[in-house]
Image (cartoon, rainbow, N blue to C red; front, side):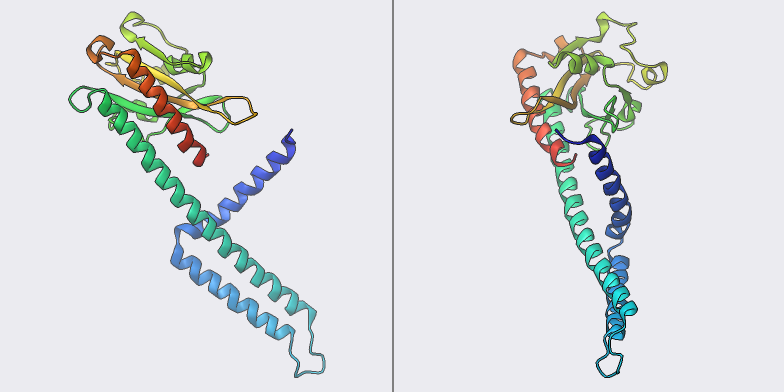
Length: 251
């Protein structure tokens, strides 16, 4: 069993590390200049600390400071390289996610029929979920592109609680608040008639299955007009498994 205080300390250190490294990664020219200057300064200090031509050839203070400066430059350079690689992987993963969601929308008739697709991922506290606006398909201009709700709220919340796919005809429950706050309800697209929500699971050997989020297909059309069948639901469930693999890469 993992020691929770240790995990918290590790995460705190990682947050500080990213706070230092990420600005350098975003400014490659400035970071290259800074690292070069640190390396030069450290080398000069090392040279000052070790001068064989003088009787007192070893000076501990400049040698120690030079070693630390050079060490910092090496660590920062390695950190920037690692963050750059990680960020490239995240960008590629998010691009792949966007393609999966676009493929799902096309499966249900977009752009000839109204259909939107999106992923809602868990917030840091694990108690709420938020639409990933950057990968959502056909949600441009919609307020619920930025929607954040309690983990158990909405049709998607029912999918989370039941750990199974939920297809809902919103016309059958026109006044249902679905556990959403009024401010959250106001963000939801008012013309929606159908929502299909599928939980996204992480399955590791020997570990308890957990939910990473949900994937949604919704539309202003009724489920009869969309002609959603059991095979369509299975298709979205397969897509959810693919999305789970991608989400694990950017956790």
